[in-house]
Image (cartoon, rainbow, N blue to C red; front, side):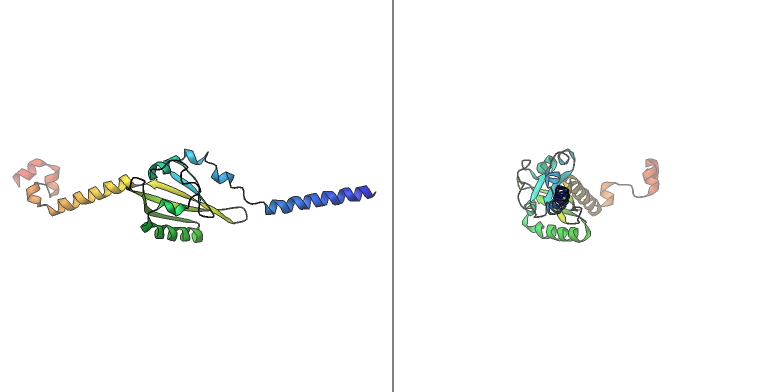
Length: 185
């Protein structure tokens, strides 16, 4: 009969020990540092750990920055930004901690010295006990669009500065619809 009590006590202790160990087990970071899913995303993606270091980065973001894939893993995530943009990145990070998501347009410096304009979204990640475990940094390279916007703006300003008569540009809707009407006018 004593062996039955001992078996029950051992079973109870094993169950209790298993529950305690589960609670104390740190969050497994392998899910987030695994690059299997992240590598196949077309826009730039980086996983930033809770301590502020880059856990992983997909090849697209590495190419946008002009670095080798995996070169910045383990480094501070603020190294992605030039010194003048780090304050903006910190403010965005603070907003992300409060709200859970933050978005802004920001510039990053490539290794060749050129600037890239990115639309960046930070998304906070919490574990099942609502502990902050890091954040995803999602980016879309908007360098080409910014360049084209600037070019259109310059051309529009040049057109507005030019004299309408010299350019022989029709201004009346009837002139635009029919070239013959412009000649008779």
